[in-house]
Amino acid sequence: MPNVSHIKAKTFVPQAASTTAIAAAQTLGGAGDMTLSSSSVNDGSNMATTVTLTSTGNISGVTFTVTGTDANGSAVTEDITGPNNTTVTGSQAFLTVTQVAADGAVSTATSAGFTATTTGQGIVFAGRTKIRGMEAYSDNVAGNINFKNTSQSGTVELAIYSGAADGPLEPYIPDNGVLFSNGAYVDMQATQVLEGLTVYYDG
Image 1 (cartoon, rainbow, N blue to C red):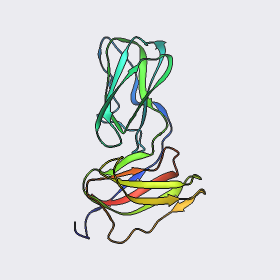
Image 2: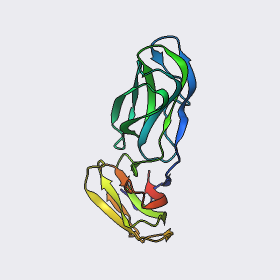
Image 3: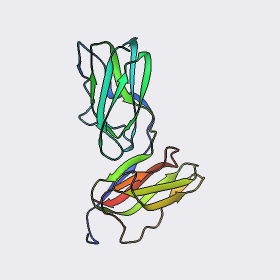
Image 4: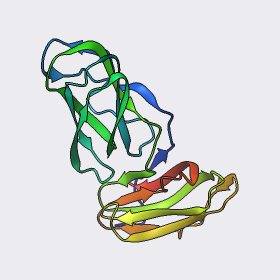
């Protein structure tokens, strides 16, 4: 990879919960797909988080199958039982959601959304890349921001420590960057050691 290349930036910022981010409140006359807010929905954080279903009626007899990708970019699905005049939350963290399918009629308007950002995990770039720099703001929690090769379970190629005090974080990264041969994946921990992170990388 040459030293001079196209540098891109990606920002990771935890988001508040939204019960309608994936799909606005709607009904279905029978089994089918909910109408999503876009073809591939994320919570705006660029990090994976869990899915919610909200309804004022009892649709607990309906199972909703959520399809999308996880923090590795891998395809994942989860079945979530419909709510009964409440909000129910799944356990699978989704980076993107591409489909929410109900196995029966949804007689009371039901929406789909995300919890507040829960994982701190996302994808900087899924292919061969170099991380050239980063800017962040610490969140009063000490810990490492880990950049891993290949997947979220891959080797940590770059770890940046954030101290337990609010303030900007602009670590020095060698001018030639740090190589990630099979993609760069960030994990800034579920405790959210940062208020936000911008990564500069080859893309």
